[in-house]
Image 1 (cartoon, one colour):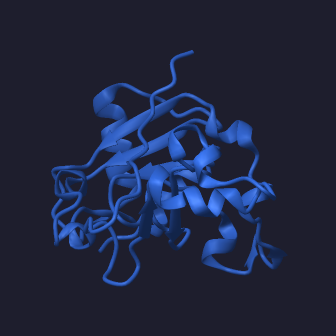
Image 2 (cartoon, rainbow, N blue to C red):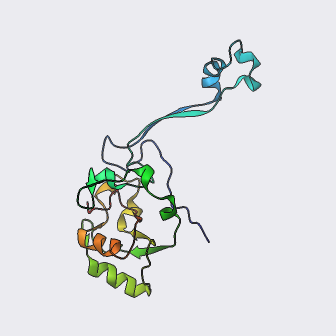
Length: 185
């Protein structure tokens, strides 16, 4: 088994979400936290800390849609499967995240294009692949090349209802995209 890390780090001031929805990270180095660290140990002084240093920490404010993440059904609606309570992130089987993956190359589609089931079928045929249940599908759109740029959120194609159902009807449970959303911008 080969694991491929496609995650991206959280960063301040990177155009990766609509204005106001990006992360806010405050960084504190070892010197800045030394006094605070002593509060955890009654009687300890900064002078007694190794090199007079505390801990390097970050205070982070973010939405669950920032950076590399997995959206649970609950993100989209309170119910699923004809009225059943939607699954939350802690209810998604971790095993779903450790399966073979296939990449669909949709970079040729214009920004805002809504991919169809026929588009998925055509790409699977082009790469000679048949989907298997629990296989992960990642969609490469033109958005990836714009990551961090002001127009990132408006870039790439999206996966329409028909394309999404095509995948789920074949047992796909985890998908990914290089765009800000699975939907078209």
